[in-house]
Image: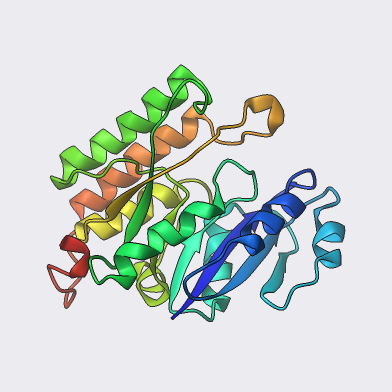
Length: 240
């Protein structure tokens, strides 16, 4: 199996080199590639990426900023692996956790795995950020009669073809809710794995806002109102 690690990047000149260094240093239980999408950065991100030299690394460039959802779509379309996982370049997530996400797949227990953040005083961006995240996650659980732990997590691991079949249209942070809503609508329940997390603050470049939370709720409601796609099986290995 080959794993494609998809990294959307926008104006992360201060962190992207370290983020890639950390990701490339992990001992993975399978072959990997890292697909970086420079989403129209206007700082020195492009120059830094141009100096990176590793056969496992590929860089795709958007001429202008299109949003996280659009960057992930570009990365997924060019991915060569059978499985994919998203890894932001902001150093909030530890790539050392990726092998833990892979374990349930390699053991045959799941096809979709989410990294579940346990927010503590050392890792939470703010009280309202945590409340908002839990509120959106609770809304998904109520609407779809599920029990996932962290809807907004960056660490979403699944087959590349499954992600492509979801046809995600949200170009920004709304893609997190759209991915989860469409999976749950197909009755695919992500397998939760605890992960480490260190949130950065607004002064460090945190981009998500309360407006993204409102959009996430709207997207979940929209997906709940839709019927399950014709021909999609009601249950998969992810239900185990």
